[in-house]
Image 1: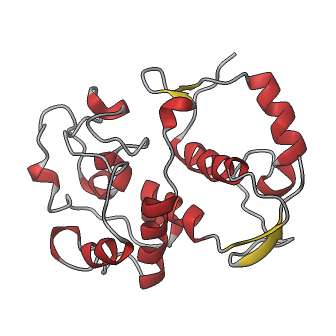
Image 2 (image 1 turned 120 degrees about the vertical axis):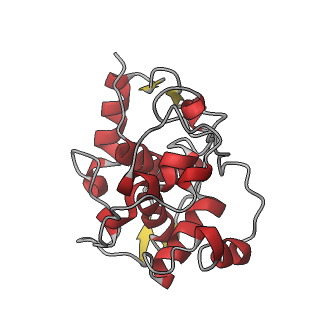
Length: 204
């Protein structure tokens, strides 16, 4: 049985996959910046207690496809709305349908952290009034180091996971639940929450 994933759930799953894929046994330092950046990428004002914009982003009117996606206001300020929850933009899940904008994705971005930081603080992509310096650093960390090829894990046409739900639940319960909670929404690397904490992986 396959299960449909929400954007927030997808972001949390990505963080877990990166951890598992690292193959790193022993103690590692997790600052939490990358995961926070993924959540900000989805809907930043829900993460940093900001105010949801009521007007369209200045770049929204320049989207190559102005007819498919007719959303307005705060939706036009979500990174994922333009660049896709799979980071592929027009080449991914948003290549068609009501979310299509025609904008490129960020999956193959070659910009450095310094270039991305500057991008978020000036010009058309200036988010310095909406994101703190730490927020921007988090998003930059996610863009430069937090992306994986989502098509390996999710069917982009159906938005359903490719894996086996029963086997996945068994693995999640054994390896993930104690930190991330039964609903997958808890981020706990510090015996009680917080970021920037040292966390020892368990061998498996």
